[in-house]
Amino acid sequence: MKLFLVVLGVTAALAAPPLQYEPIVTDYHGQIGMPEAARIKAYEEAMDFDGSRIVGGSQASLGQFPFFGGLLINMRGGGQSVCGSTLISSNRVLTAAHCWRTRQFQGQSLTVVLASMRLFSGGTRITSNRVQMHGSYNMDTLINDIAVITIQNVGFNNNIRSINLASGSNQFAGSTATAVGFGRTGDSSSGGITTNQVLRHVNLPVMTNQDCARVYGTRTVIASTICTAGSNRNICSGDSGGSLVLNNVLIGVTSFGAAAGCERGLPSGFARVSSFNSWIRSQM
Image (tube, rainbow, N blue to C red; front, side, top):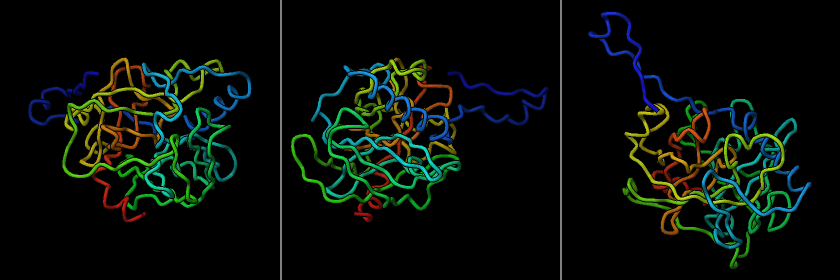
């Protein structure tokens, strides 16, 4: 995407006009999560599955990402939404704050789905309503978009295991990280129930925050944000709250993408785990 300037006559030479940034989706549940939950449920009820999700990614195998958990959220007033999450201890799960609360919706309870390739059946399923959102989470800009879920203790095995949290000052720019999620395989897969519903993963290059801010602006991209570059591979709608992993360390929690869709080659944004390491540990 090319950013452009609005020029207003000769005054442009005296004062630079504001940049026009790509908007992000803030009504996640209404626009994405709840329609996705209904679509995935319909698919699972309608047919067997053999897999394809996340744009340009690959199907995961059971046990390949033992830290990953699907997330089904029951909303106050009715309805169900879908997100992803990451197991960080035997009784704590990390997700995006917007998976629990937005301006338009508030979660009432949720189910963490571990060790399953499906969202609505199989695996280890744990219900909770104990969610602690970051105190500075902003529902309009999606900064500090992170939350810790307390669950009952779960036993570890080959298919269920926690992951280490990133710490320190490494920005990871130039590295290739892996995103995991149940989200759509593309913008056009939003209709009908024919798109296969299984856990997917994709390798994405981590970019600098400066380059990411040129697309989304500094109200959305701050020091505690980490971004991956977009191309023919990307996260997509429904991947919110999921894991961004490098060398078996969790470096990001999926937070936002462009409102224009996931196939335009625009960056994706995550909560930078190293920035929240102390806060996360204070909730454990």
